[in-house]
Image (cartoon, rainbow over all chains, first blue to last red; front, side, top):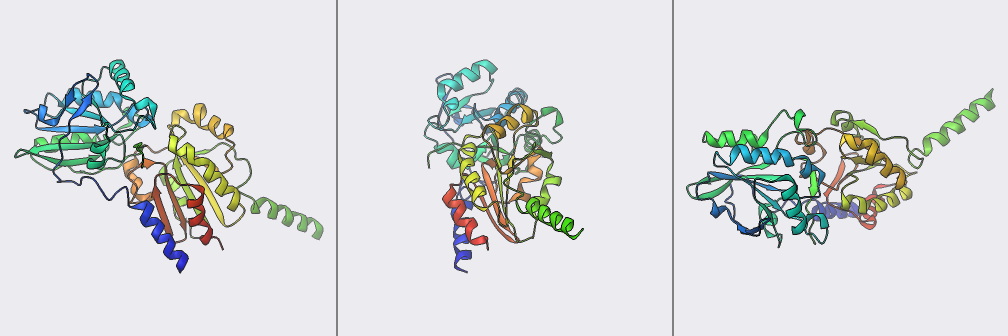
Length: 200
Length: 163
């Protein structure tokens, strides 16, 4: 019985700590002010005409994130003109993953000509506030009566490996719902991703 | 003739009592529907199921600790499965060379099922999908952890479960 109890303690210690924080659907989101690859600071407040935002925690090094680069570019080109710009945020500590340093972000942004801001979460406070756990991890924010409301959390679509095999485009469907004044369904999905690198 | 039988029995005993420590052949590639049976055994065996990828630095870092655990308990009521989430196209170029270079003794499979939203909750509702992640279970008892483990942490959980 004692050892069983210790196992429960273990599961509490390790299992729930990561999931106990961060935004849930319907929560008010915090704006941020983060350094972009062009050297300027970017906030959601810089987009007074936006109807909402597709905030994507992503990075350079993670193959799941890289596999989605072209799809993120396509989302940006499709939805920024409709009022839902993509904002990419790299949450990783570059001392733990050198490929995710600010200078490497600039290199990758230039190589791929990212049409969206690619921001560095330098003090790693934004991903913790949002509750991102992996890259890529999407949070769709909708502006509602001046507030920034979290309306979708999860994956971009249902195939991380092959864009041609996708059968459900979660982010596209979520934006379509928001444009109709409805809440997305599904509003929460999961995906395999790389752990966000931070010093505990 | 009876001696022949005894020899067969001895041979079977040798073969079936050391299933884990032998060098493995190529990892099997399977989808989640095929893989799911590994999450549902009720046979008094402790299963340690680790989700990882060759490119995942924290996964690779903890593999020696998993190997050590497999060496310690591999001949008991214990089964370790290293479930690679590498891309299918990296099977020959990355996964197999990695297994050979690192001389992994635990069984490796490649879980190729990119519709992860359909199956992550079936591994554990606690899992966000980030790797590394590990499920340890025996019959109905389950511990799931998203993040890395050390040998001591693994040992603390597994040892009491082994009779």
